[in-house]
Image (cartoon, rainbow, N blue to C red; front, side, top):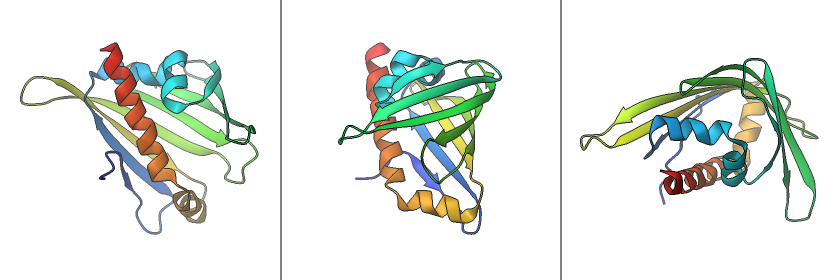
Length: 158
């Protein structure tokens, strides 16, 4: 099965470019990233804090199959409604360190006039080695599964 979320990792660079087109209006796609109740559903995580503003912060927590809790947090450096989110992301108790994420949201319209949207994520890691370690994890499958859930959940909200 082809993965709908595309990941481009250029050799020798410490970044990833991730793109996904959704069959959703731009406003609904953006809402999926800023509404705590929706974030919890598609990410499969608990939102402890989500301050959607410039210089805001967020904190998420997930529980694995063994019952262990894992935290994720970051700072939202810039938020422009329906256009972009610039933030850091860090997994607690992991050796990966923080990463810088640039999320851009774009309105698309297909030939039938249906509203579609595109998410482009530019993620920068501290080093090429670190980026390559992330790619060794089931990263591509995980982000595809999450984006598939996002599409399905937001289809019910349309």
